[in-house]
Image: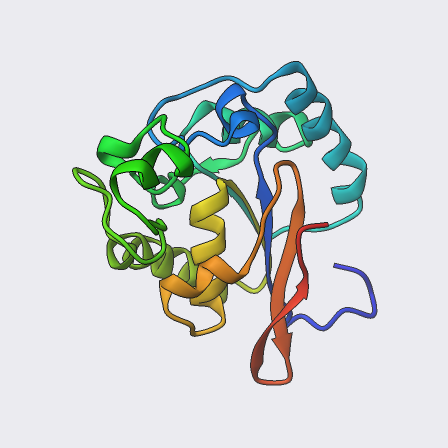
Length: 193
């Protein structure tokens, strides 16, 4: 921590993994463990100077390769694996685009409709509530490396919103976001930067 920073600072920094073939193509990717594309690796490396100089009390990562590799390239090869940060399990919709899903389920959204054979929004929220509690109970900053939909739900849960409100937070690959407090109120300090 810097000298002027209060010791009671609680922040949750979110780093979405770099691009994979499926994220580039808009395909829902949860348990399929894809590697980063070369441009995804370059974008992950570009996170390193943006994170340099920050002190983190804990650094966590999803167990999936794309998140772990992003953490490594961003300068955090020792990030602790936390299974609660795995991406939303899409079940039968794994590998499909939203357009393909809507051909048989008009108006479908992961935030408001079921994923047959996958997780519900409430199940995802239950996992991510544990991450929120872990970050809030740790003095200082927590940095997590994870995935688009789960990080959007994580932001909603930090703010005390239902998991469906994750739909309000666009999140691109290899971006940083910061959640924190203004006085006693949970806030978004920076998003999708």
